[in-house]
Amino acid sequence: MSQIFHPSTNTISKVTLLGAVFFLAALLWVFGVIVRSPYVTEANVVRQQPVPFSHKHHVAGLGIECRYCHTTVETSAFAGMPSTKTCMTCHSQIWVDAPILEPVRASYRTDQSIEWTRVNDLPDFAYFNHSIHVKKGIGCETCHGPVDDMALAWRANSLNMEWCLDCHRDPARYVRPRDKVFEIGYKPAEDQRVLGERLMKEYAIDTQRAVLMNCSTCHR
Image 1 (cartoon, rainbow, N blue to C red):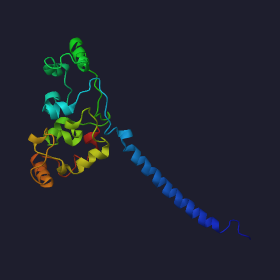
Image 2: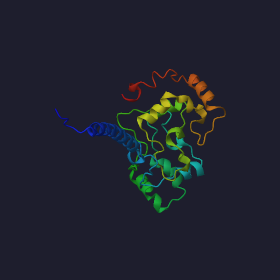
Image 3: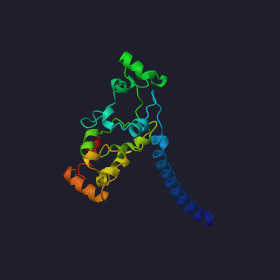
Image 4: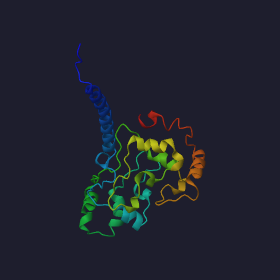
């Protein structure tokens, strides 16, 4: 019986199968790049606000600490947003007629909250508690980035699950003394690994990762 297919068909089949494997691998790689890109995560993308509040001016310029505006960060899951009365503590005395602050004055007159655009906003299926992270020595800028350099706020990190897990797998790289949690531009006084391991024991952070790596810790 004569051969139906030309011998070169074997080579073509092998090349085709191998090419398909490389194509699928490339497709998965491209997908991974896209889901981690600022286009999807909105990391490093400046968010427009009803009032162009500058952290750079207020934090770096005036030295206002995080807790002055985010009053519940030490006691609640939500860090809290400042009320208009907090803003007017200063702006009833300075920049009182600035057009750019009219939405603040209107909010104060009408007792209607300003609708700020959330910058760091986790999905509803992910639970995050600010107070526990503060108690365990995780600094604000670890997650929120260099807020003292943000004329308008942007998301400094992707907030993807893999980013959270990167810290939960090895918290010693990030833990700092509790009195340094709100310090911007913090530099450890000693080797971070040595300091972190010591503080993990002192702050009773799960060194076996059983709790930190448990799905129900964040997905409740």
